[in-house]
Image (cartoon, rainbow, N blue to C red; front, side, top):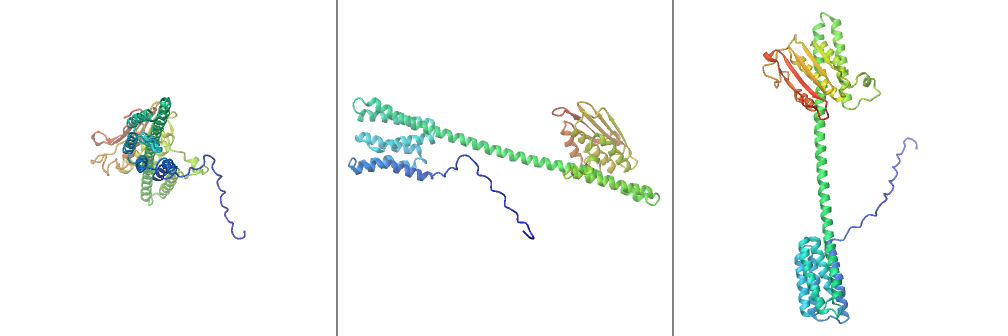
Length: 407
């Protein structure tokens, strides 16, 4: 015990109650050999007692029994050979103890081939039963013997058909289970791809916006340092606050922010209530912004509020990054019971290359914005105003069960 503590092994799991484990079945060839050997036992007994010692009778019995070794590979052919041997036996007028091979052959056809071949084989066997009863049944016993042998033939055919049906059902269940497993794997892959896209989109929104604000504030601090050290200091403090908020957002998004941390209460998940602080942050970075929120935001779900926040954040980030100096922006949000409208407009001159240009307002955030809007049935409009007098981003998010189609 001194110096270290030995880890105790976990207690063994109690044995699971239930059905005892099944013993592995014998291989099919071994089963067929044992079956043929069992059918040969009456022949051996008959030979030892002198009841069947003629060579041709032994050959007939071998022709009845030995083909069963191939019954799994060629059920119909084996039944035909056994039936032919039985027909020769009937013509020869001898009764042999190996006639039970006919029942085994019929069972094999019923269990492995199909219903129609089994019916034909059963009719052939029934014909042989009637002929055998006519020739060998004692007087007054024909009906009883025929009924008994017919019942045995029907039992063999029904048993084989039942086994075939059960195997088909099990095969269908296995195919269905395999299909469900493939579907589950496909859904898992789609979920992983969707989650990766969501993570990339969220990280882009958080990192791109906050870094753009921090760069603008740092440039302003450098510019103001010689003339107004106090303003430079305030700008750098704002850079520090922006960086801390970015870290908080990223930690919350990645699921590592504990509920007992002060930042969890001080920085709730962004929504419509946080638009004012977002706009103020952009103002401090050098882009004058006017915010107008109309309607009651209370009916808007938290997820939709986060979508609105991210759309406004990305649009203002693009304006801050790409618009020329002196640009002003306006954010208009309209809330109603069934939809939320979002519009962000700036008066900076649009880049001639259009929205898809790396130098224009589009950047790499537009695909993510379109995906966010599409989740609520909205279509995002992003492009220059008439006469290249600015840039406009607008959409309408439906709040119905499946998302009402928006602009």
